Image 1 (spheres, rainbow, N blue to C red):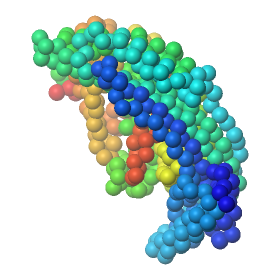
Image 2 (cartoon, rainbow, N blue to C red; image 1 turned 180 degrees about the vertical axis):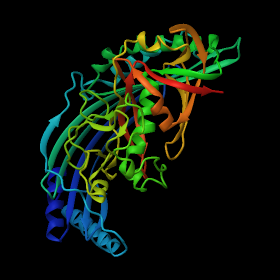
Image 3 (cartoon, one colour; image 1 turned 120 degrees about the vertical axis):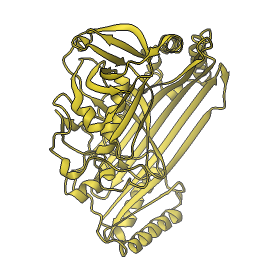
Image 4 (cartoon, rainbow, N blue to C red; image 1 turned 90 degrees about the vertical axis):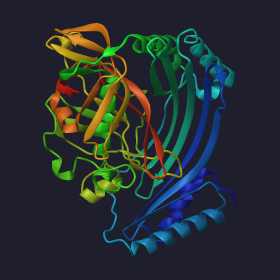
Length: 476
């Protein structure tokens, strides 16, 4: 007998409960992904992925087990459940401390993100034509190397848990990614930049992003940076960072160190630790102007969801509120360990990956300055609109951001003088303590956030105000 995906999930729950488990969840996922690439105007090999399967996670005698499969015959399913229970019970004897899940309200829901131009209804020819049009807009500029890529995805999920949650969702998404390299042979200078746009929905976002105008403008600016940017002043400078830099800071300096599994040490061997710990909850770790939010509920966002991968209802998470470390990103495992509630941050990237604490859309909240006002009392500084490179240590404590498009600020005014690769380098507490204002308008960029072992890539937004002011950074 062959079952369908949803019926198989129901059967898994029934089988496991009959054999004695504390908790079980079964998640059926269907995933359709298309990827189209142009390199210097020439089509590259694309990718067309059609995947479906079921992931099963159980709690038995204080131990957790996980298995996945994409064969739906009754014999195979019964054996898969039997094996995961056997292995989990065996591992329970080795555990010093039992795993418990936080108690959460059961959720039931069914939702679908709408798309005016669904990826499924947009032909490959139309998608390639879009890339050719975008590429043509920059082909006459001094950009000897360029890649443009479109990726569309439809992900459908059916989740059922033994404590009463049942969620169905379908989320289409679209991502544009580009890499440009500009050179100036007269100076022997080269600048490279990557660009990413992403959202939930369909190809209607192409018009909203106005990609041909966006990328041609960015290509011209990149060429000017290579040809005209001047050496950065040295000494103590004030910085104003744009949403591209601001969002990366929110993601790397706050989002990752706020993940509870990282704080509790599970991520230590994979991606590092955190400068934050449980005792710092409620402590002032930045100025009163710093509020950092991670919000999966932003409509149209690349990291959008209504319920997380454990069926917990999504909500905005105030990681830092007016400089105070307020909450962590929890799944039910980390929340249970600390005796608190999940923050709805459990995400998995595919049916054969377990849900772990992840960001969704992380940003520094806006302030009340107008754009021109944010520069007015800066005697000498740098407006770093976006970044070219960055690095941060394993504890997310010491970080370094290098500007790409950056301008000199002098005597309270933003000048047209381009500055070549200014470096904003400081500790995370030092950075957050040095912020003293931000502008009103928020902007976001898209990215794929990597975490876990095996690696999981999760779509996210990160962003912030048009300008966030950071005082007294020493530039050497």
